Structure formats: structure tokens, C-alpha cells
Image 1 (tube, rainbow, N blue to C red):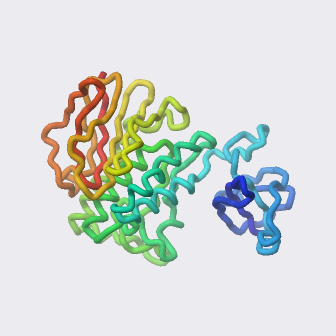
Image 2: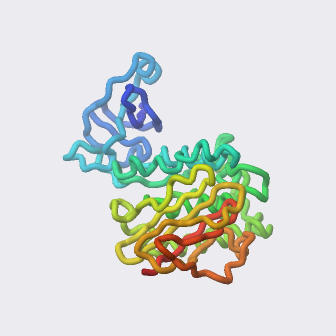
Image 3: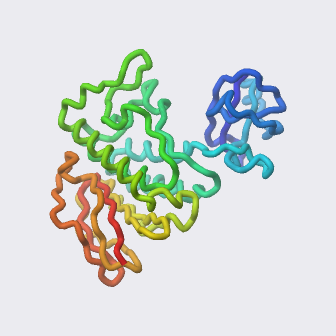
Length: 319
């Protein structure tokens, strides 16, 4: 039997859906397709479907995905997490786009926070995104070989700072450029090339920082854990937001344009100083910048920053 889960838009169409083949599911039961066969829930069949949809999927169970993570006694399905496919599609599409068109698509990277607190979301970069001609994550980045890596580093810093738990499929951490094939191992030998070795080193640092910095995850599902510092730099493709666990504060600043952005004034309140804790453009990771001066003064609620093209920086905020 085929199950389909998705989000129903106001016009009655599915904005997205995921299908999988499962066994032993009766029409009175619904199961989230991403965990097919593991945790069945006795939930009434919901959502009218179009005649085309019905004829195409005659043996389908249709699950509306609103409330996937709500408890069953509150009308939800009771799952721990829901894959944020909207975030994944919008973000990867943005990074595939040539930089001269990213101003047009600027708010693809702000939209996720408009619905984020409706469910308990996980940010997925699964095996589905690195197979069937879709290209690997590094390959999806716009441009030629050397241009992909600074963007991939900035992309991952954006992902890790964005609220939500993370899913990153194997091979992505070494910048693999060949799609995943279950019949062979990953291309571990590419680590002999400096650009891949540096990228792997960067991912190790980013993972360690994420695991040891509660501000990046402790309040993932609370409004107090995130707020925008600047999301109206359409022409410059600059984004900035703050993460906190209630004690430590982190400012995450991104320049996704292909030009250096000098003299950018970051608006930030109740702060005296910023200090760099991780920068994607650090020469240690194959970047173009040597961070000899890591502290930036905040004056009159603003910090003046010089941002490299295709870069991301995390700053600790001192008050």
C-alpha cells in the first residue's frame, strides 16, 4: 500500500508530499511515510482528494502533515520530529541560483521562520538529496569547482545556526562530488586533495562548536531562542540573526553574495563587543582571510563588519 504525507494548501493542493511503500496498514490507520512500519497510529483517514489524485493513488492513505508532532490526544500524530522539506528545498534552490539573482530570491531564506514554530522541525539533508541526478550538496552550490567550497561552508553555518535539529547524510562532510551509490563506498580518497581536507576540517570544527555551544540548540523550539537582527539586505544578500540559550548569545552573520561587503553596520542591542568564534572564510579552512583581530566594538547599537564574499561568521556577544 502507498502512503502519502504532505502539507495541504488553502486551495486544496498539496504543497509537498512524501510517499513510501508500507505493509499491513488498514484504512483506519495512518502512518507517517518517513518512518513507515515503525510507529503506526490509529488516526482517521483525513483530507478529501481530487479525482485525479484518487485515480492515481487508488490504494493511498492521505495524511495531512499539520500537527505531525502534536500528541495524538490533541489531534496530532505524535511524532518527535517533522522533516522541514520546505526549508530544504528553498535553501538548496537559493544556493543553486547564480549570485546576481539571489536578491530576487532573498526571502527564500527568511520564509522558514514564518511557519517554523507550527511543528517540531528537523532540517534534512538526507540520502534523497544526493541521488538520482540531483547532485551532492557540494555540487549543488553555484559555480565552478573552487567556487563551490566557500559557499558550502557558508551554507552549513547557516544550517547549523538555524533552529531545528540537523540531518546530514554521509559524504557531505568531505565535500563529496559523486552521488551516493549503495553499491560502493564513499570517495574517502578525495581527502588527499587540500580543498577537501580543509572542508572536512571545517565540518569537524563546526560539529564540535555546535555540540559544545548550547546557544545554538537549547531553545530550538522556543521563540526566545531566535530573533532576526537583519533580514532586509536584499541587494547585498546579507542576513543576520541571534541565537541564545538564555545565557550565552551568538550572532550569526552571512554574506551570500559574490562580492565583499565592507562597512556593513550590524544592528545589535544590549551589547558592548562581538568576538569571532567561527568564520567560514578563515584561511585555516581554505578561505581567504586571516583573523588576527577577532573582537569588534559595538557603538550606538551597531557593529561595523567587513564580510568576505560567500562567507559566514559566528560572533559571541559580550554585554
